[in-house]
Image 1: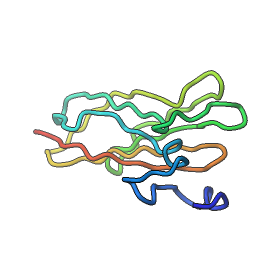
Image 2: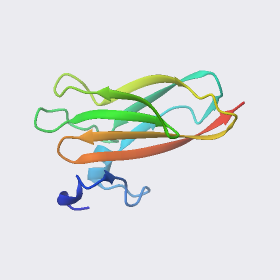
Image 3: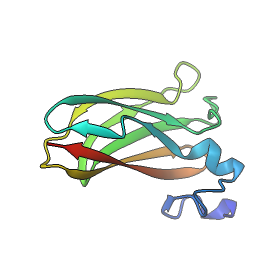
Length: 124
């Protein structure tokens, strides 16, 4: 991935099992149970990067959006210097079972938009 491509769409890992250092610093990490029960609240923690991302004035994470399937859940804004790029949100999946997809999208002011997903099993 070249520097000029960062603001041309959404960045995703080229090879998820072999992340580059850039990907390790920018991909949203979604922490939540692998299995949840429909209708019951559960926590989703999103942090940016397996290697923590800097939060300096000149280089920082501006925001992260959380989606459940195609449904927008929330946007969390971060302030450089004073915050870490990490948030925990309590949500409810009201589906009929099967698999739900959580999607986190974040924006680095220097390296653009990054996306990651996590599948969770939904019990009735």
